[in-house]
Amino acid sequence: MRGRFDRLVARTVLVCAALAGLAFAYNHTTQPCTGDRVGAGGMCVTVAAVAR
Image 1 (cartoon, rainbow, N blue to C red):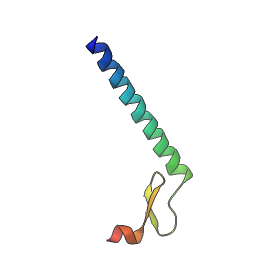
Image 2: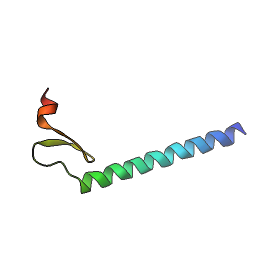
Image 3: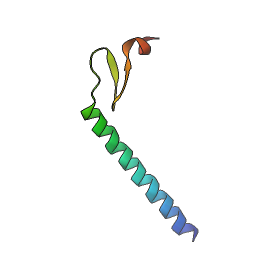
Image 4: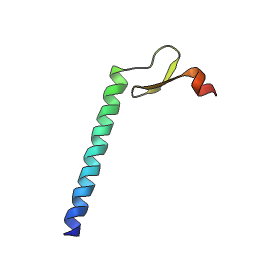
């Protein structure tokens, strides 16, 4: 029973990691950082905030 549960957890973690990677790649291509903003995956910050 424990082995079955462990496999379920491992499979769930793998699926979540794959979906997070796909979401990051999608946001990186559809929401690029422009102007005075830097970052990746749609998560942009201003250059002034990075310089602090």
